[in-house]
Image 1 (tube, protein in one colour):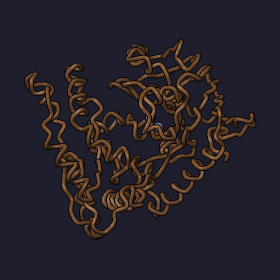
Image 2 (image 1 turned 90 degrees about the vertical axis):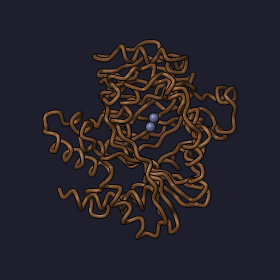
Image 3 (image 1 turned 60 degrees about the vertical axis):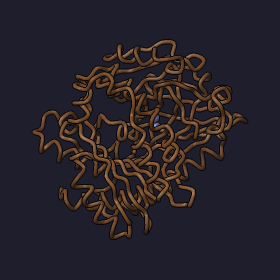
Length: 409
Ligand code: ZN
Ligand code: ZN
């Protein structure tokens, strides 16, 4: 593998498909030290595409950890407002957001969990007023990943660090189609396929989906007014962009109170720094009434006990087994990749964008429409070569959607 040549193609994919850079656009790039070589390549190409400016939001795992382990309690009371002011001013001035993630799955292992949740809450309160710029697609934004040494070694524990990093890069390039001759053209074709599936599903207004597979026999009702989404999004002036690289899913929300049957996860779930294997659930009236796991059952119990909505589903996503991520055969231990490798559900919070007019509804209206609410949103994978998903129209017509794990529409 020629890392440098692939970095050039990856940067091009991020700029042309992820952010769809137009002359005069400006960039806010969030990164850490591992992202610098990629960011420099992105800068060269972005300016060639007539971008006007690039500003960094630099982060460092060592500084993050130092804060949790050494800062006084009072340091977690408040986030100064100027950082949100800076971002808001940038968004209003045609800056778009690129996050280059080099995650370290075990970074906060020694940190106090109470401190972490307190700080996350204080930060999200401070950032609430700027969330709308990305959540409502007022600016273009895209998330792409690159290996951190810690992530690479956790995925390839049998390799030396340098070899693990190079192996993970190779899998990232496969998963994002960067290894193909013309990744930008491949993504345009992929986007069209996603849009076809989204259109097909939205045209049929399915009343319910039936999942059948080993350990799975589940009926999931979809609320009236549910909207399937997937692939590219659009800002008000019309530019499309790809929020996640890679992305393979089309997704909507299930009815929080109308899910019945059994469901077996088909891939291990990596969450809270642990690996949960052999996970299975029984649902009645939308609620988990029984569950088991071969390992990590205590983590699942903790998740389910978070709040009332944590025992109900908030997302249903369809992914074909022939996706490039799945073909890597790798468990990435990172949601951006693993969630896009397979059909999945999420326990917990649903997305308002998946409900017609959902963003304008208050909580009671959302609840009445069947949308789940929770503090958690945890995805788990249910796809596989034996999965069959059938949609039922309100008139009772059965329409096969996935057979043997792959799309048949
Ligand atoms: Zn999803
Ligand atoms: Zn999800």
